[in-house]
Image (cartoon, rainbow, N blue to C red):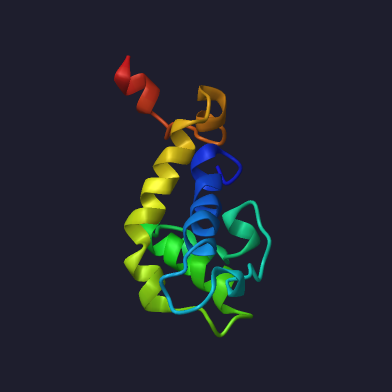
Amino acid sequence: WERGAHGRSFVHAVNTILGKDSSNNNASSTMVVAKKALTIPEVLEKHEFHGSTDGLILLRLARNMYGSSSSSFDNDVASSRVNDMMDEMFQFVSKCDDEEVSMGIAPLPGVLNTLQ
């Protein structure tokens, strides 16, 4: 799932919204990505995202990608931008084809039989 559209949209949204953010009294150039990543598991441990809401995953990604090596990271700024990051996730997934969107998604056992 992490290589599918939904999984990739998290890192994209954090980089797009916080990477260009200049409303936090710091120049956007100081918001250097500490960990280049394409997927959530490259940045977070399983217990940091498994079962979490998209908003919590975004905040944890932001903290781990921008906060670990940069004192300019501001939790309040990241929290205030969650809706923008979620909108960016939606835009990202909207531009993907069906194959990308469905990558890594499998119905739970019994679902297809129930729907038939």
